[in-house]
Image (cartoon, rainbow, N blue to C red; front, side):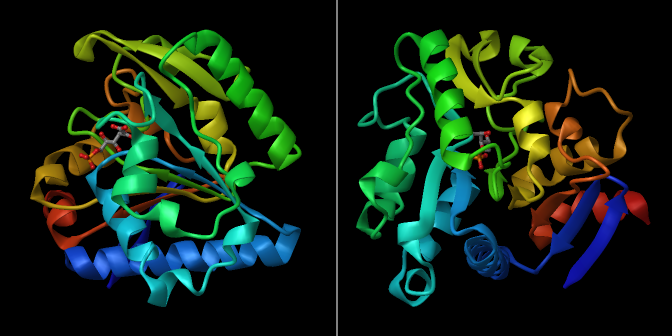
Length: 252
Ligand code: 6PG
């Protein structure tokens, strides 16, 4: 397994092929949950959309993994959501709960906080931020799970969109002209407050963007993922062999 500090803001771990990387991600999740619960009695985690996080939720929902998590102490949030109702095929909530199996887990309903992004998005973003503050008691998230798009977006922080510049808030409505839609998203401020942020990227289709985000000059308006991670809270890039292939080639 390749594991290294990439720079002062980012760590990289490459556990191996696709399934070895998913296995590592799930074990990391279970460890973070146990450590957070031992430390302060709950595990506040933010899920994201995307194909890689989905594979992680699916494995986590299997009995041999799920039996090792104290689900009653898990607080489930989302780091971004599409402007659709919870039963819509594009809903990130539906993906985790119904498609990936989280609705089979013994998580108390009152601990599941769906992002409502389908109507009155401004008001719902404010309400979601209040819920975060109340439920976390001012603590940061214990784990924020993120994917990375091939255009360099993460969560719903898309290139050149307004939410990239939002300050003094944790959650923002974001108009995404390139998709002709609205999204709700955590802000950089919210994400970078968390001591454990993981960017998961798997497969050859991510190889080019991973290398570009990590090695090209810092232009976060163009490549929002570049802004994830601080010297105090390093972001973890969890990559499989394929997604890391251009990166290691360009570093040789
Ligand atoms: C979403 C996301 C988004 C996603 C990336 C990667 O709701 O679309 O949260 O940030 O994680 O686009 O998605 P894939 O893994 O499917 O490429």
